[in-house]
Amino acid sequence: MSELYYIEPCNRARLSEGYALLTGAESQHLTRVMRKRVGDEANLFDGSGREYRCVIESVSRDETTLRVCETVEDDREPEVALTAIMALPKGERQKWAIEKLTELGVRRLIPLDASRADVKSDGSTRERLERRVLEATKQCGRLRLMSVLPSISPEELPGLVESLDARLSSGEASAASDLRRRVDARYAPYDLFDELALGDEVLRVIAHPKSDGDFGQLSFVEFMRERAWRAPRAVWILIGPVGGFTDAEVATAVAQGWSPLDFGRQVYRVETAAIVASSLFLHLT
Image 1: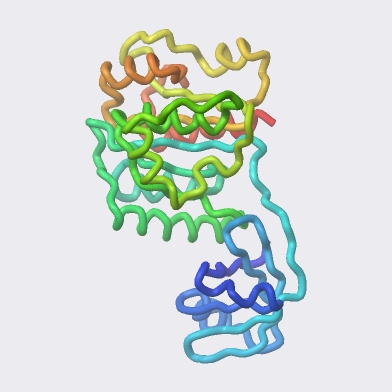
Image 2 (image 1 turned 60 degrees about the vertical axis):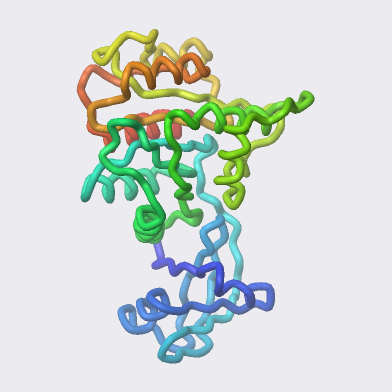
């Protein structure tokens, strides 16, 4: 796999003219670390599924201009679009989780501010996560960045589900609740449902071991057997914090239509649970 360099949104204006621009760390890595020079080839990507095979045209102290020789559309994405709504672990465990979820092909991450969460997400948290996503994306050769969205609390999940149902429904839309309007406003700048069309099937599951309370959990095999192993268009997974969800959080989610799943008898760390659950659903097709 060739080294990939990321074209930031602010540097994409000349792509329509057949030229690409790298600045900052990406330009420095290309020319100072990898020692590429005028006339050398380089592969770039824009984070949305396109790869640009280029030749370096000019190099200055702060930027590199490249001529685009070929544009390749190759998403390399799983057929199941997976959204992980996850309580974030701390420190290196958080970094490792982001790296592996990116490699697996998770489409988006929404930090979950559960009551027992170790980390409550804010703007600086998102910036850090996005840097780690970019590093992991370049390393694994993925062409689409895993989106990192603003966090949500368990109490706000009904508004998110209401927005999802409105997107999928072909019937008359009912009046939006205040909660949905608040959630919609938060996620309006993001492509929260870009992979979905009317009538698509979206599974909503919550990972919760039976050892933490019986809410009618099924194993993954039991759950998929009931569905005759039919793969959905998308899956949304709720992953709880260290110490797990509270009983009230699980009961509320189940009442809202989230299917409770037990992913094994062992006690998983947060990041392990996210990776196990994501791996199982992403490899259905």
